[in-house]
Length: 312
Image 1 (tube, rainbow, N blue to C red):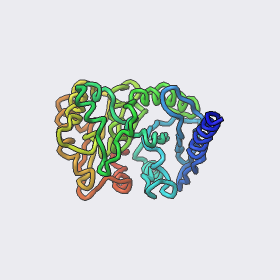
Image 2 (cartoon, rainbow, N blue to C red; image 1 turned 180 degrees about the horizontal axis):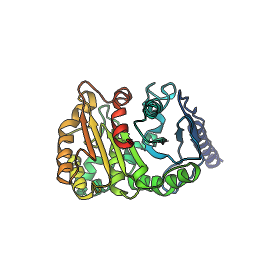
Image 3 (cartoon, rainbow, N blue to C red; image 1 turned 90 degrees about the vertical axis):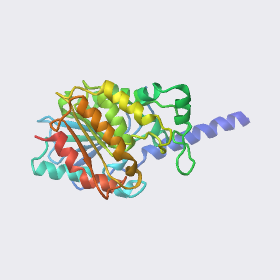
Image 4 (cartoon, rainbow, N blue to C red; image 1 turned 135 degrees about the horizontal axis):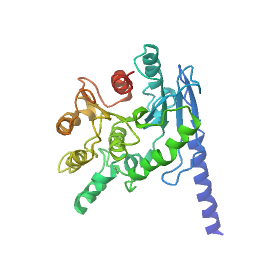
């Protein structure tokens, strides 16, 4: 009887969690509209919400570029985010479209894996190239409050990218009027979302033609002492950066809060970019004074990468 009760309780808890997740309010946007996708099953990752933003006047009579964005739950509506801040990306893109500064585009906002976010966004192959001792050190890392960085979840970003490329993108291309080629397919995010966006364009250069990596979290964890991850990322980029002839990359960082860790590391990334043949035509790195690690800062400079990647 006790075992039956435990099974019922466990099933109830799982059902409650799923119900809470998929009963989240649909973002309210001042411009354009949101189409929610909450039924797409995956064999690679947990089921999640995807909010697709369509610009005003969206029509099946023409094709649109697609911008896949990490942390989709933080993109559109500050009234429903955990910190009451958002990128407000719909407003930024709408204004750029009115000014004819960017091509027609839709935004696919992919909600993150919550407590699995770090494991989902952490580039897997650079991690696997570490020694066993180094991997254990990274995996055991904690935050400033002593909470586990990975929450005991194994890194599975390769599966996350398979979900994007093999499951989500085909669905988006089927349901919406999109250009399907790499030239019109972009990916972006901030912090860990910047890392996975960098990883995506390197792993799938035939799928993604541009990547927007804002406040890219090059340390990987939250300490720099004896941290092998930045060098592992540099080695990975040296070997796997896509062809600069037909790919664009945007990086940036501020100098406050968590972003204060990034400038010296981004400097090293910039050196790799130059060595691999990237120029101002296909690569941009921007450094911002008095900007921190927040949706407010990313929103304030969002027009720069959007214009760079999506220019007419």
